[in-house]
Image (cartoon, rainbow, N blue to C red; front, side):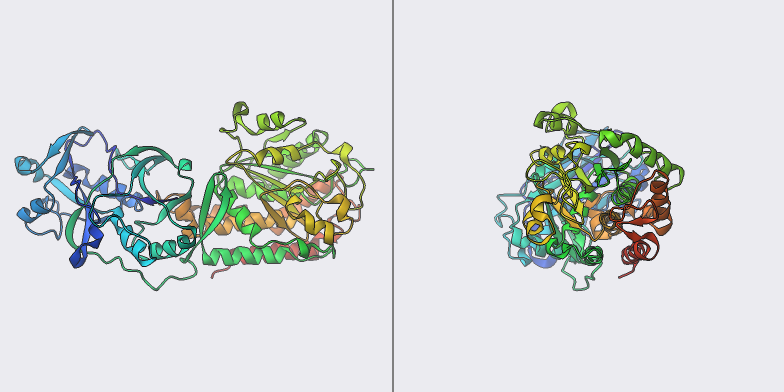
Length: 581
């Protein structure tokens, strides 16, 4: 179900002394009328409010696309014709006083004096979608005008300007999956933003309660909304399915998709010759980052205590990737928390404190633990008051986190059982699978990491000791990397690409308010960098955390030196993320 933008219809400010909107219930399907006339909606209000209302429309150009306005001393519709014609075309109005509708009118003649001090605004309307539907072979509204698309008030507020505010109002249309991307491309190639989707999927995720459908008037403004052929990779939209429960699709430009696929390809090299190439699934990084981009609250976990004979038993792969992702999520204004083993709580608390002191993290990340042992315990941890309808987190991310095998144990790559060092955080991922609204991502490089259950058949077939060590717990998205830290870096970089993408940004903000590109500089500073990752690894060394392969306490990860190997990977990811297409 795709929600498409409709014009403003209610909740105008109480300061408006007299606001008049045309409402002719039997004018329908006007985009199919001869002559190419422009269907529109009209707002007439006092001159003293005209500048603020114009700014209000400009701040909400998606739901309130302003076509034109009358001169300051004339109330007539621009390019509409003479006054008698205007009244013939649109004989019905609604009158608002102090923000409240006080009745309907068939003529404005009794208000001639007031209209001298009022300004008329002409707004585009939802009927502009009709032509796009026809182009992709979908039926339009009933040509006889006996039906219309339902209009709904949402809980999404438009950007407030002065005293002007209102909720976003949308129409909904059922669109066959195989027509969705083509329809999206057509609507995006038409002038303006009217008709482009602001939500694709389960309508309950955006809607609150219904409102009466709107109507239009016909102006002499020519309807110029014909599909353009000048779409570029930066503006060509693609649709990607990111959630089944609730059903949700996201939108992103072809250029951004190309970059993220390049990131996925870059981190998939196999420096340890483990055979991870057999585990790869296309676009897992893309779908994981899209899901994270829509999330409000993210829970990150890490920790694979492979060095069971040392204190601490943790390795240098995992925490850097988790912190790098957390730093970028913070920059996007999302709530970020970490859940770790109770045994390692003190260590991770110190790691986070030190990263804040050294500027790797902007602010503290809450560190949580989970030692429950039942589905009910996991649900209570993930949801407010244990209610699955009120999840605390939208997305769970595991980066180089020990994953439970089919026999209930946890193994390092050498088949050594490390269950005594691991808390059952896997239960949170299992519980999330049954809670609508929570998605999950697992990042791994060997098959024994939490979330890799999604590719366990390939792990058992192609990874050494895979028949024993393979994680049995799935995540919605399985990001495979040569080193798990690289997967964390890549997720941060993919989020940067998405939130710098105009097409995705518009969809995120539901065409309301200014573009988030204004904050791009802060996002750049939040990206992983060689300097920050060197500081992060140095902090781990100070706390005696060892390399995963060699067991050395030093500037290396998975037996490979930071300088010369990991620095090159970080720079490659940054170059891909910031290059201009």
